Image 1: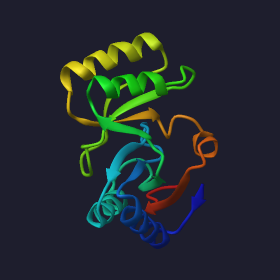
Image 2: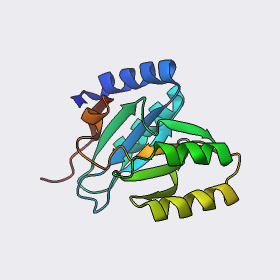
Image 3: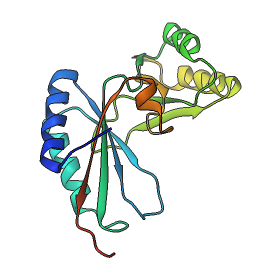
Image 4: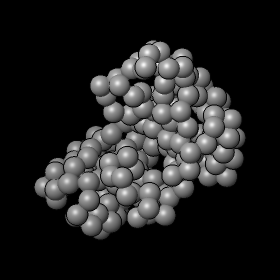
Length: 170
């Protein structure tokens, strides 16, 4: 993962959004007793507002770690129907934690999850619920990008990181 200063980070995100159409951003507040929050950024305005939100956060130690991922996150994408459900079943290797996300949930809304797990039984249950409640919705399926330390390396993913905010204590 490439660590950048805030300005390089912002410029890189803008380039990524222009070329890829979307970027996944994890906003993490160290020492806040929680994990990061995922956002789907699709515009330059989303990028600017997300960085400002992270800089102004009053959680934890006053800093925010922003990690952005380009391409290949939730790589199986489509509108929920019987055919897409079959594609999900065929794509899941059965040995990794999966997630099903709402790709219509864009910043400032947090990325919404329709399901996640690591068992065939749970996946089948969640796919049935997805088909009965979200038919026609645009969703993504794949491993949760922040779930394992080696995800980026295993999948040849471009990821960048920066820290913003002001340290409130030492």
